[in-house]
Amino acid sequence: MSIFPESQARPPSLVIDYAVETKRIEQFLVQTTVRELNRRGIVVGVSGGIDSAVCVTLAARAFGAERVLAILMPEREGSDDAMGRAERLCRQIGVSFLVEPIGPSLEALGCYRRRDAAIRKVLPAYGAGWRHKIVTQRAVDGRLPVFHLVAESPQGVRSDLRMPHELYLEVVAATNFKQRVRKMIECYHAERLNYAVLGTPNRLEYELGFFVRGGDGLADLKPIAHLYKTQVYELAAHLGVPAEIRAQAPSTDTYGLPQTQEEFYFALPYAQADVLLDAMNRGVSDATVAPALGLDEAAVARLRGDFQSKRRAAHRLARDAVRIGVPLAATSGSIEGNAP
Image (cartoon, rainbow, N blue to C red; front, side, top):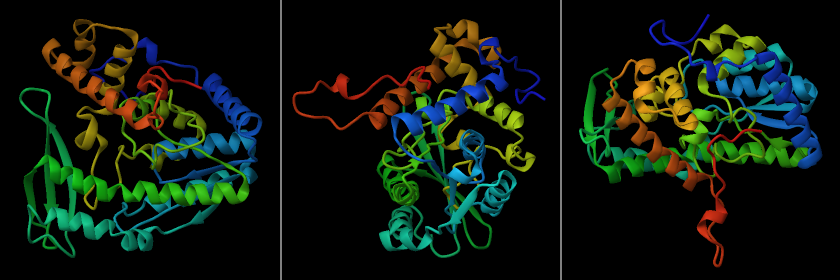
């Protein structure tokens, strides 16, 4: 069954042979880990979502389950059954897993305290028992993002408040402790075992900068960063990833209220976002791609501008540190069309 809406045709450029692709990725994993990185196996954080599920399954196929370690890292604001899905997947494919709760570390670092103090600048009542998420919208001019705080009281009353940009940055900076703490734990286990750290971003996330520098953007190898999100879902079906994981909508799983990646970052359903990014990578015009997206040409042009802005941000996130005497361009390779 296609994950594209009936009203949206799948571009031929997004159709791949998943049996061939599976073998290619498995060969890449072994070649890179053993021969280039000189590591014995793979450590991967497993969240209960589609990307990490595909990655840990591919790693187990490539190395054998005995040379893969999955790390499950719950905290108090994760979705209710995410860790349950992750544990059931690990048992199904036979990989060892460790549960490393990150809540105490986040408390000690002030993740929740710093974030809540920032939120109270616009919502003074925010406190214990409240939940929230951030929703990003495009302004009328199509350029400047508009951020909204959606908060829910313990009694279930919701507030929707415009967030000044500096407040948005403060909340996100505090929240990013979560991704960075998870990566520290992955690196610890990888170093003690002489394993490689496997990153899980798909192409939509990788090319458009939906990752945290020093957090989920940090890895020794990224085996699905060349696959669009729709392709990851279809590869998951080919690999036999459980339906309960494949049925989950892409989520940040970072905030207390359920939040989709679409409302937080991409501003498009992932099937449409894949089509647009693929068109950009292949040099397809707005007029040509508009019917495939069910949008007019002007709307596609605005979305293309947004994606181009995100791609520039992704370059900044992915590049090496800038050094004296080294041109900036030399510190960052292109992430467009990047593939293993």
